[in-house]
Length: 357
Image (cartoon, helix red, strand yellow):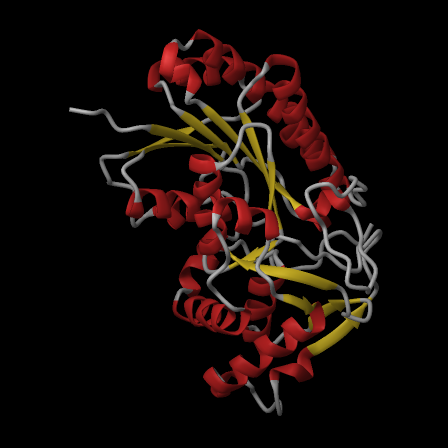
């Protein structure tokens, strides 16, 4: 009987990681090993639907812990790694960049070294077919102006925040391990993700939950910053497509084809909440009355836009979810899962603004 392949996912208790694991367990034959440090935004409640599946294993491990990584790799013998473990919130990186340097740079280095040593010990087809997929962000490219330019895989890096600089550094490390050691890597850079199960510090869940609390909805600057929004289920489909069919050493941009100004995103959320939750308006004509323009965050990029033509042409992937249908599904999920949001917020985060200093 042919044995199942095993994929190790780092950061699998986070937003994208948990979505990836749910997808892999539900739609593939892979065994999944999930390793996560379980910091403030990592939460195993997002994996309750598959936690008892015989093809799923969880280990609480810090990717900076080389001995634990070494033991895990020897014990479980994965056929592929999907590296998602990272500190990922720009505002939080402004307040405290040290954690981003430690996890995103030192952690990626430690992981690369241990996985490279493990890969070199493999033999024959097991070594030949091994893959290391590094998942990154479009923020490493920096800022676009308001013209029709798009980020391509050849766009020079120009990160603006401690977060994006740390991710850019990790991307460079991964490419260096490929070039220096012939380590079989793949890299993806994605646009802004959204969907259920996202930690409430991010724009969309933050606005939904803050509006329901009847509090001011803080919009940075004039709110005209543009982001490309990617439904996370589309993203995880893309990741598995790259893992299984991508070419070693290549980078693939993953986007949702949904360029929208931040203020428009907030207005759409408010309009849907007006429709679905009129009883929570508490005398307001609309949830939009809660919108408050606040001082922009330092180094705030104006526009991100992904050119995802390479992954479409080479690997036949494209997004399925448009923003309006995706955001409606997302809002409905948060409205029916308010307990989930309450449970994952620890004492250090109460929907306040971060990244002011």
